[in-house]
Length: 228
Ligand code: ARG
Image (cartoon, rainbow, N blue to C red; front, side):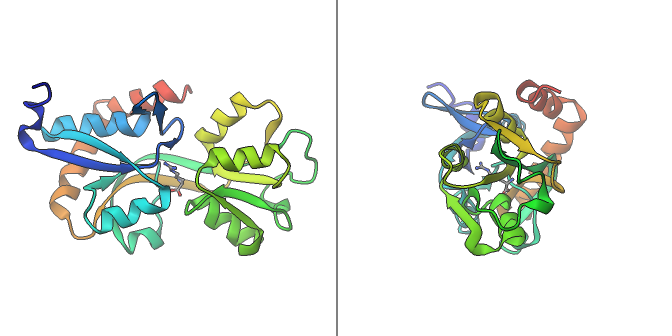
């Protein structure tokens, strides 16, 4: 059977939320994007067969913490709250949050004008927590996906969406009634999460990441989806 040889080292199960193009998204039945491709290259180095499990973003950390999935790769930003329940590898990409508004919005011109407005984000993301910090918890509308947040913005139900730069650019390329307001917010770093204390896997992943950075594979995959 196909894949049997690759599976000699066993299967490794990745948790993700495939609602985050270009990092991970659906293409028919397949889950594709930067993270699945990097994970595939890592699995190959480990001699293991990669399986990807799609779930709600806020279910990812619990699934790794409980050991249901071996690791998570989901354009996931490293932060202290998450690092309290999972361990993170070395970072493999950087990003920042941007504000999306309707193209005709003149009130929101950047981070300093966001307070007082209703901001949408995918539940449990840094867009969610950052919007809560800036605007207050009750001013944040939380959605299962950023796609739904963007639909809500287009319908005028909310004033802005706070999300990672590359996915924001995908939405901008598909919706000419939207624009980015102001500059990018502070820098974020993406890493892979593993169960706390699983140093054996953490070290293997870090070694694979280092090799894939070194030989240009990660840059190549990122540049394929995010043209410079
Ligand atoms: N980088 C942000 C965070 O870590 C958003 C990640 C959303 N990822 C996804 N696959 N939906 O909170």
